[in-house]
Image 1 (cartoon, rainbow, N blue to C red):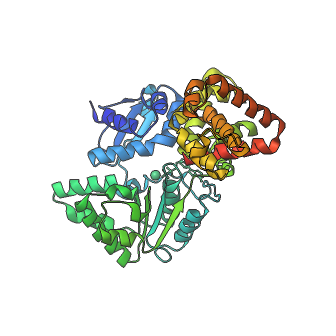
Image 2: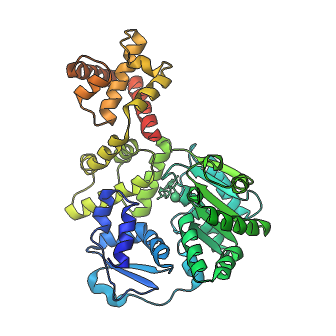
Image 3: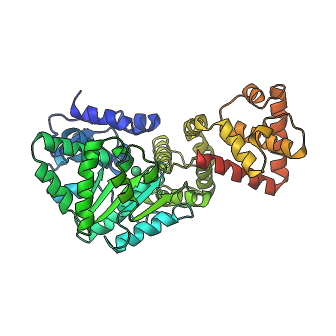
Amino acid sequence: MNIGQEVLEALKEELTESEYNRYIKHLTYDVKKSNSDVAIFYAHNALVINWIKNKYASKIAHLFEIKTGNKVNVQVTLKNRTEKLKTKKQPEQKAINSLLNPSHSFDNFMVGGSNQFAYAAVKSVSENAGKVYNPLFIYGGVGLGKTHLMQAAGNVFQNEGKIVIYTTVEQFLNEFIRHVRNKTMERFQEKYRKCDVLLIDDIQFLSNKETIQEEFFHTFEALKGAGKQIILTADKHPKKIGGLEKRLQSRFEWGLVADIQPPELETKIAIIEKKCEINKVKLSKDIVNYIATVIDSNVREIEGILSKLHAYSQLMHVDIDLEFTKNVLKDQINENRANIDMNMIVETVAKDLNIKPSEIKSKGRSKNLVYARRISIYICRELTQNTMPQLAQYFGMKDHTAISHTIKKINDLIKEDEDFKVKIEELTNKITASN
Ligand code: ADP
Ligand code: MG
């Protein structure tokens, strides 16, 4: 396997299967023309090339750097266009910065209740480097915009001419190992201690890696001491990251710790509209709303969905309407459904209606319980892939006809009662958002 194939294999781990199959699988790497500065891939159509450039090129460059230690310029092209490729060596400074995605800007970041605290914190840091919150620590679940926000600040600093290093723990560690091996540690230290701003993504991966924690501690101290801004992200609060030295953990909390929560429906809608604008995809309001309700909290999925819709409509020469969208998203929805757990649905409904989860699954016949049970069954049917007999078993009901009867009742209610319909939508959103 050549290095290009290895990198694509590594990228596979980070993508959904359909994303990988659609965009990455058919890429071929040009071993002969690529070198330590340029990695050349061929794709079979212009659309795919565009998406790869926008979405995956920086990831691919990053993976190359992890594997080879070289910062490469990733080029994706149609096979007959290679002569146009520039193989000029990139200046070192540019290469460091090229890992920042320019579309990760504050303007492109949609703010809502779920992320406004983190947004305000990062914005404030971007206007007062090293002065307000240092370090700034942002934490939250996957795909909620941590990297985007961190890089938005990075882009501001970079435009001001500051030396910005954006890296991940993994990359920091690999670089460290390489320099130890080559006995060039002073270069490593110089690089990291001379920057103006250090952005380290996914700091939870420091967990249980003592040597790199030690090195990172000294880097941190040097930068903090010199008033240089540090921004860190993680999937959890510093206190919750196990296997982390106490002195690091406490330093992570020195500045400000800000969390990002899953986006509310309105924020998801705003994000989808923004992504459509950036990617020049035109969608009607009902399609945007539909996508917002079917995707779960992970905003990263939105881009995959838009690219899928765009690619399908181009390849098949059809307009994107709601029916088409539903069809294209079938796999996606099923994937999401497979991850939603019925216990979680019951718990959410129970909490909302102020009863115990166990009561929903009991044989109790009080009005309240029957109402909660019916709603739970309906949502389980909508959001999971369980069959009617499986639902009957789970809810302790006689058989699948009891389930289908319940679902019909709820469907009738939804048609008659607007408030009830909204209630069901709210619950559904809550459940998909926390998944
Ligand atoms: P994380 O680092 O938290 O896993 P990312 O920053 O990589 O998440 O975000 C995943 C994708 O979702 C990116 O394409 C990002 O631009 C987008 N995204 C997340 N939150 C927002 C938001 N509030 N506004 C616009 N785009 C967003
Ligand atoms: Mg991230």
